Amino acid sequence: MHTLIFYTTDSCHLCKQAEVLLKELQAGHDFILESVDIAADASLVERYGIRIPVVKNALTLEERPWPFHLVDLLALISG
Image (cartoon, rainbow, N blue to C red):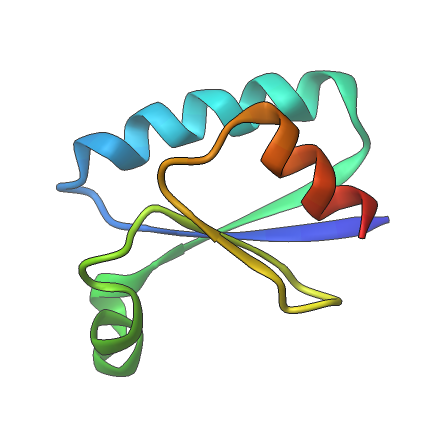
């Protein structure tokens, strides 16, 4: 089973939109969604701070920064 890592933070309105899209995808596909709040780690803030929301395939390490669409997320869980 694939795992997608969702880099997010509480004060990100785009992250809320992305989360809705991810939950919609998860309703029809079998994968684990792991949310990571970047605010808890300075290195993650440095790497993803201006790019969040970002989704990453935990196995392939392929990333998709916002804006992404269902087809982009499907490609991530297929890879």
